[in-house]
Image (cartoon, rainbow, N blue to C red):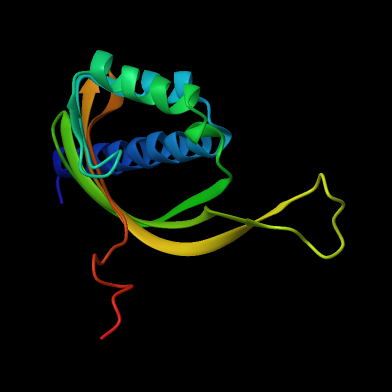
Length: 163
């Protein structure tokens, strides 16, 4: 292996790690409901597909409006936990593609009272789910940004269908 080949491999590994760190920061911000931080991670020409379910949005400004609406109407306050795992990432120069497994516990809209809780206290039932992020990233001014995000839940799409 030549020095040039080795440098190319090291650069690809550095890029993959930087993309992983970007996506981990996205998930931390999502769990903390820090929408300003999330929006900063998006490229100006980003496309978001499937969030909210069945909708597609293009451009950072339009996507920002969607996230702000979610925050304002209270959906951003739902209790949930999100974990991502097993990324598969490929890098070609200043562009990259990847997909991740999404593991989450979403608050069910049905609220039940705990036997031990007072009348003011409620406990939300949470349901474990498995989803998938299909992502594209691009380097902008030396920094990786999210340029495409498709969220599929459930994944595989028929995982909760009774047969």
